[in-house]
Length: 280
Ligand code: PLP
Image (cartoon, rainbow, N blue to C red; front, side, top):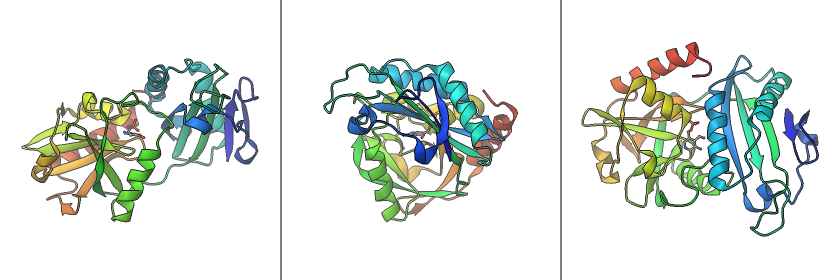
């Protein structure tokens, strides 16, 4: 695998073999998780919705108080990394930007950002997924709520919790007891005939796929108490890797249909519109 790397002694960017790329061991991204990232899908060497991803990266940087990343440099890095890994199709493009070399503590000294773009084959998503609700909450009022930072250890822990119980994704409630999101996905449910996804005020990441599904397929943003989950008749996850993925069971309760009619429609609309417009 070839990666594109800039900063960290690589200046305005170079493509190098992943095993040879070197990030300083005192990079603040490593020592304190002081960084942000994006996962983008590329098909036939073309990145999907890159403009939206780069805009969200800029929002995450601002939210974390990081120096604004150079988005033109990154867009060029994405192109170079895709060219260097043409065999990966569809490809998972991981963009990571960290605060760069820093002190061991939490304070920043304002070093240059480190940029890395890595490309690997995107695994084919399962046709449907069982989800497990984790027994702790996502803090919708926390400083990192809604930011795509490299401080993802809680998500790693939650996914591990779900996997140990036979689930394919973990779902978080927020501190108000409402539905929030998955570890790497947003959630939509059909309850009382309405397609609903938690609003951004409930703490989920502003998923690009979520945004596109809302724009293309409709649905409402509304708080859903966890106590209403037994009334859900259909549900699906959205993410860059899954697109629209039907949920088969929530905490062991099989949903009547997976995919049900609303989910099938969302899958079809997303597939059609997503194939027609590379940068929606
Ligand atoms: N929520 C979290 C916590 C995520 O990490 C992700 C993506 O990785 C999503 C939601 C889905 O976002 P997107 O559709 O932009 O991939």
